[in-house]
Image 1 (spheres, helix red, strand yellow):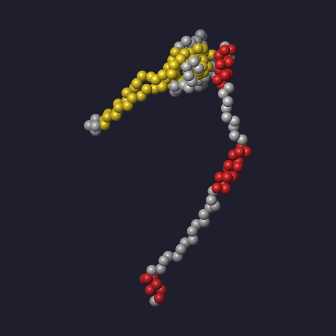
Image 2 (cartoon, rainbow, N blue to C red; image 1 turned 180 degrees about the vertical axis):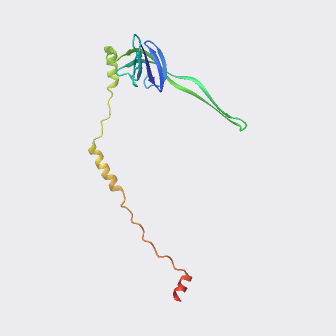
Length: 168
């Protein structure tokens, strides 16, 4: 059986036992990784094609190594302008060994299911109650200054010529 997965914006065709390099994943060596973005499951008579993902299918793997990829040289150049810019880049990669490919309805062995349950039960922050947000809104409203009234227009200043005209 083989699968096509999506990871890091790239697609990979996998078989059980393959070791692939994907863009950096969180975790350390020996941690289990679950790819749930399975685009296609193949092998046997029929292939299951997802729209966009195959429902219930997943690929289980183990992190083998965290490393950097080969250096890529980026050289920018404009002729006759004395513009040359050289940069290098090394992509962070994670090597993953594919342990199993599971179709919809199949179950993982008890050992792997227990390991996954252990990683997923990390404590999560409690959601804030709406009652707490209401006083904050009142405080913000209290801090806002009252709307300013437009300033009254002043009479134009009288000049010496204007005063002379009025006297005449």
